[in-house]
Length: 382
Ligand SMILES: *Cc1c(COP(=O)(O)O)cnc(C)c1O
Image (cartoon, rainbow, N blue to C red; front, side, top):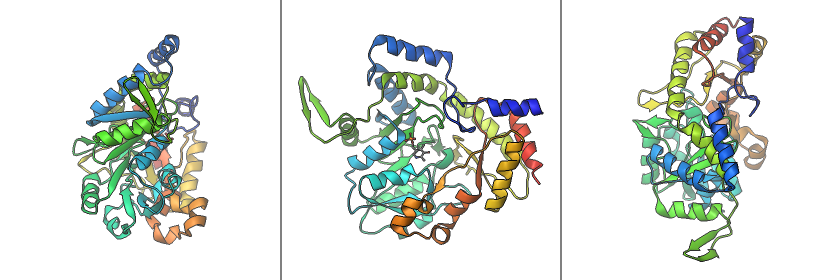
């Protein structure tokens, strides 16, 4: 078992990031695609970017997909394209990667936090309406860990209150609610290709939308505010450089072809965890019947921070590396100092998920035997 355990520690993607729970199988085929682009001399936003945009728009089921330089850039430009800025409020879940709230700060608006449900780690849709004020302009639901939020219901709330919706689907490419892909519900959908996500370009992201105007605005903003009309070129916005390189698009594109296979296999691995882990002090994630989980992260919940830290240490001794899932954002120093949030009282579920949660290994390079071994090791945790 020690040999197996060593394999567990040493497999995966340390070359690309130091987290055990990330997936980045860069195949020879993908490397060859990158080399081809390098040899072509067409390095930035060429035909590989266009091809990837077409493929992903088709997969999600939207009219437009626009490649950008990171997931954070996709959220940032989405807010700007919607005209959100100073004096506006944007509703975000209290438990997510901090980028979800940072982008609201970046455009000068105020993030208004709403607590999550512990069963799914997603925003508690029943608490959204009481957070809406006359200043509220948008909601950014996060499909946390690859599980769709209650997105259909959330869209009803948004439409009733005339709010925009940007889906933060950074870690949920391929996730579905009632067979509809995330990223196709809201006004805009945001995805990341960071190495911790299912497929990666190193850094990168993509925005999805059915709205022609928003798509055009984001294309202009990603490229310094440029507008090209026939042979004429003009700068109509103070834009950004949020472009993706063509070799990044080639890299992520060749993995994208295998996305559904990767997700189906992760589905099987997650099911083994769900069947095999039996421990009275550990709560397993719940998947509602109408959702297809993309299993970015398999997140356990312990009963206290102390027990969580003990489990982390115990697994480390057994050569199984773990990671923290996401942050209770109002509890981070920047947000605490600026808004004086009492996160422990106001966002008790987010605080619990942050302090008592633990992400265990789940990626497609692991074998079923390894997943069973990890499950048994967890079951023996005293
Ligand atoms: C990864 C992630 C981001 C940021 O994506 P980057 O590509 O790293 O900028 C934003 N939101 C969530 C929920 C994420 O998981």
